[in-house]
Length: 203
Image 1 (cartoon, one colour):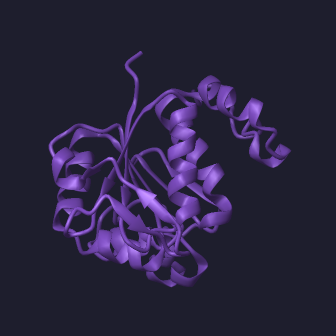
Image 2: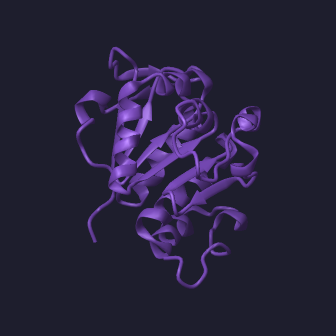
């Protein structure tokens, strides 16, 4: 099986827990992970929403034509606003949909990126409670992580659900056994071990 390739989009004001948790879990899973700066100037050293420094690998424009199995959009209001204002991000998400590849968004990003541009209008999704009203009630879900397999979209609530969100990406891209291989040595709480989710035919 080909090694999944995942893009994590960073910007000034990105929520650190969401970004770093996803990056960490992608590395633990053995995926190829690229962290891209989506700031307009392409600055690689970024300050997160809590003042913690985040370091991107490349400016987004350098990987805009690459194919990714999943593009991840962390939250943080300022960071998600920057992602939502990026025409390149919109274009890349459209390409993900055309290629039948995944997009994953957490916290404010489902509202400030996806809903803002009417992306995935028919998908079920969730987001931070402070932004949940932006999602049409008929497509709104209050679960901590929502995996809409038909539309290849994963969404989640916020920093506290970042680990669940990250492991769900592993599950989506590499299946049950890989997800369990990642969480078993991490001494996660029973509610985070994902075994309760996996039913016959899921992997």
